[in-house]
Image (cartoon, rainbow, N blue to C red):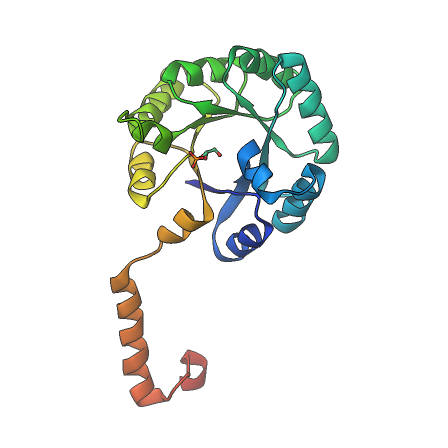
Length: 225
Ligand code: G3P
């Protein structure tokens, strides 16, 4: 599983880089706008925090393919490793073809149907981002969407990966992993929940209490050897 963090908050990103096996960071225009700072400053700040080896995804905002291409080129001039997110509209698919022709890595985003994903992959997108929770919210099936996209990738031997996005709980992420998704991008609050269990906490507290009765308060293995 490729784990990514879905935020532009530098503090949350640096914390997650330190704690987790994080492969990258994804942003979208809403996430960027929440920071209320210049885009250049946000992207350079994230890159400084995650280093060159991790992925950073940022989205174009143009309403026509040519503008999206120019945005992609300008963003890559700022960050040569940036992965460009493009929504799967008609102009977006055209932009994916144009951007892929420049050998720029692409994430197709705002995917709500398997056919949007399939066409984006054929057009040249490397990551395909189905919006799981947004479908679940309207009594549709986000996990099934991701599963069908995985199937289509295999069926057509496409060089693309499912990047599950839009999660509100751990169960959605678990089901997505079982459905064969390659990667996920998760908000910081839900990311922390992936490890959360009260029996883990009470188990660790029990180990500490038993240990300290014999080896003393606040000691560890180094003190006891
Ligand atoms: O970044 C794309 C996706 O993760 C958005 O999630 O929570 O706004 O539906 P959400």
